[in-house]
Image (cartoon, rainbow, N blue to C red; front, side):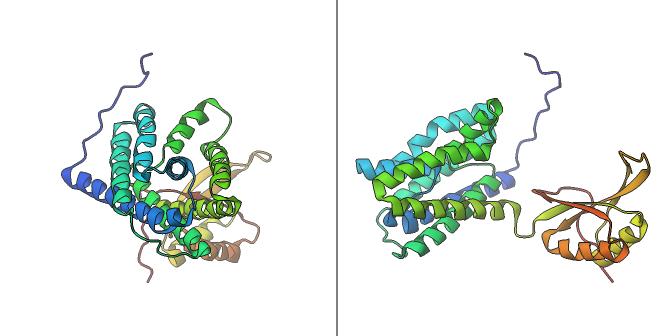
Length: 293
């Protein structure tokens, strides 16, 4: 079926952009491999997804982990090419190749710690950093997320729910292979890695969008600009019940400024309506703070 919209040709990446992407993909994949071979694998702890299946397969068949990591992901790379695009597929192929090579080179290093709790937490932390860097560079290190994106379009479940469904079976299999205490440690690793990925992708200084409705919108707006150094926009709104016209203040702040903004609003109107949401990325406009004198 022909697309109703004209197709725009995307500009090719410059050599500098391409080099930076390959560098970050390389760094992310190597960090991930260090987390695997330095913490998880020597202590019989696994991660979710294809990585978890690879660790189990390597253990059961006594074959190299690098083989499983690379070849189990190949079908998902082709799938990702059709579902997401060429850049994503090539970035993912490169990252997985580097991850497999690094895992092979690190095959004979001993565990960086034999303490189960340390291996669980730091292994998940390092894995999350590696995955987050790769995702920020338009790639992936695990094929189950690609599959989940496709399934989510034809089922009532979200991507996160589908990934979790897969991982329940994978972590359950780990219980039979490594023991149930290892499976429980693996669950902690998965949780730590999941949260770390969010921090790496969104940043520690996560942005937040704010909507404020108040009769004292002018005073609040001036105070936000003066005390926070943030620009904002006045939006025209209308009350659904009363039909009265209202001004809505919209602005973007950092996570660390949330508490101060609430104090500013309460100084002028304790009954003001405030809605705050997380933003994954901000581009353009005048988001950067102005100097506060």
